[in-house]
Length: 333
Image (spheres, rainbow, N blue to C red):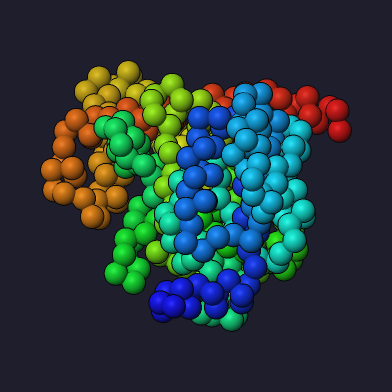
């Protein structure tokens, strides 16, 4: 038996893992995710797919794919948010270690092995964060990654992104202490991350545990996704973490434009320069590991500028839509 096989056997016997996945209307991507799970060199001990009210063939395809494997189960949770979906899956799980990923993700074959290896290597570890890389298979998605995906930083000789719930391993006790996932469609993972940080739990990283994330492929879908994020963040009362910064930037731009109208029209160029500087900053922050031409490419700069503007508009639209509903919520309660 090879040393790798021995190592895998030891890890598999040391801890049992339930892989929990919320899903909704993912008929286009669920097959790729499940194929990547089947290809793991260290298989999860069970896989729990929690459907949040799909109206397409997601549930049907999932059942067809897992029909011959008793380790898999599909739970139809009704109109569930990703937060509630993960909670439903965890509470149905038989084991105390939960690996999390999402539909729309593809896992490297060693993904679960690396997460488990990290947890086993440190008996005090309670949370393990892997890495999540954006799929950048088109010019638009490459520019989108430069605009809103977290920058990469070096760790153990590898460039990795910030923490993501879709590439992580949690012990059940952490979720019990942190209060589980909020019942939210967006931002629920960041609220849990903050609770883990504030609780001073033992967190480690597994840089080699890599998953791939499908970004929105065009302007329309990017706008829709961020409008949805914005709406749910406002409804959750999380304005300070995102919206206040955007509002501050546009307040400054509004002041400049008023000054241009009142005193000197040339001042309007300053507003454009501020927006351009932000696009340049995004590219500079995410330059690590990129060829020089990709950093200075003018076409990329213009697309990053455009995507950032679309996201800003989506932020305000979602904000207004949420604000319009808040008085109704208050009157009902």
